[in-house]
Length: 166
Image (tube, rainbow, N blue to C red; front, side, top):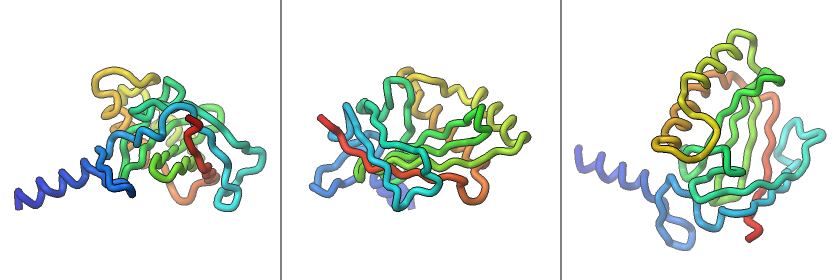
């Protein structure tokens, strides 16, 4: 039983890319760093009126624009969950560096959930910035705590196809 757990943990930590190269699951592939341009995929997006293409920079640990750290999620994806004050909503941002997909799903929050979500953010210890011991783990814990507020279907789903310009 212990051997199975050790093997499973090893598999979870390693991903095999299409070209056969292995990398750890918590580090995006090097070709998804630097200047990234993204084109909105209107065919799969919902509620995309007025939404445009975008660009950002990504550092090796999936730090976006030198201030927003994404935490490893599942199957090589990275996630950041944010609470939006003015919109009284929560966005789940997911980046898959292997496929170049960047997805934003928005969930409206009622007053009670909005207050609780803000409290969870304040208590999480995950702030802006990408450095510091345990920053990725703090973002992952914050993400998990906030996911309980994602009720039902998102009111908006935006999907961009991204690639590095390097």
